[in-house]
Length: 495
Image 1 (tube, rainbow, N blue to C red):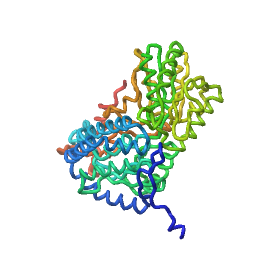
Image 2: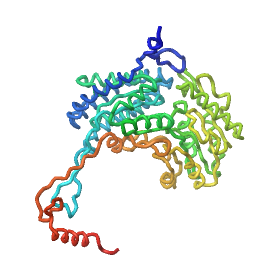
Image 3: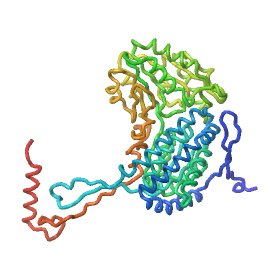
Image 4: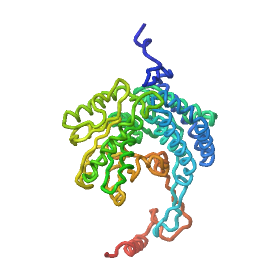
């Protein structure tokens, strides 16, 4: 058998808790991807032609299908990620709400609006509208395989684009479920297509000539995505993870803050890009806060039984990273009040709470993506802000303070901040979602998310002729002098 004949053309999706095969999917080639994008071109023109009202009606119908079959989708998410059904349902509920919002508000956000023409061009009517890009490529993550990619898919579809979606190789079944249910509602054209495979399939999508590529994943892969897209000047939207901080001030509700820290850090086995990884606590409330966190964290257990609060680590390679971060923290003088080195197993990681960890430890500097927290004592909130902002990442953050919450939130270098709650911004469809620095750029969700998948079209329409015509070779010296006087009167005053 030749090497070409031996080349693998399918791959298995495994349950990370049991290694059971839950599905087999094709490894789509570059030709497959090109064909999908070509089909999407024709579909995009048809989809855009339906207008806002026509698309909204179909998207609301799709939302209804997802809602009625949410338990079925949750089972697919559970099988491919190992997360508990309740966690799977939570991300599905959020995705449904976002889809409804995008479909309902696309016309208002993207429709034609008048702009002032100004005195010099007062004989014109000026307007701006947002038109579809055409075909949008979406490369999704495995940690939230419904909620995260739907932040691009639903908003791109609402904006009038066709979508070609490559889910993570760890969650292809979730992608297939979404594409299949959409096709039930919209059978006329391949408006939303699925491609599956590994990195080469994703790279092919980048080079396929899509009009925009939305990616969620690691910063390293994000840089490769950008490099591949640069070959065709394809614009990109990147959401590349974070090392998100939680601040606790002296007047914080410590019970609520501790609960938020543990849930934000441990839920979904810590595999949450906007979850909590670092906590900075005012020294006056530090001891009480830590005691509350330890008590709550000890009640959280990872496993694949119904009583377990968190599931397995979905991507096996992440186990080594989590282990290395814990070991580095402990070897540098840190202490594990819950968990520790023994918390990392073959598939599951038990909650780990670390204190006295140096700020230059990898457990503080790098994204751990596991159920761990580092908690540090600070003299005041100025120190907390400085340490929280001292990061190459800038995705999300959290503040617990009754009096200074908004002030502290504004000073945090992050794309999103929750005040006296945790990750609440993700549940509000009107708020943009995205980061800065190595957390990426561009936004999904909200009006900004709709505009991310559309291009502004400016139109100036002459309503009537005026004596001062500037855009002609017949313009006279008198006209130039008149215009100079006029612009001086308008803008030449000394302040």
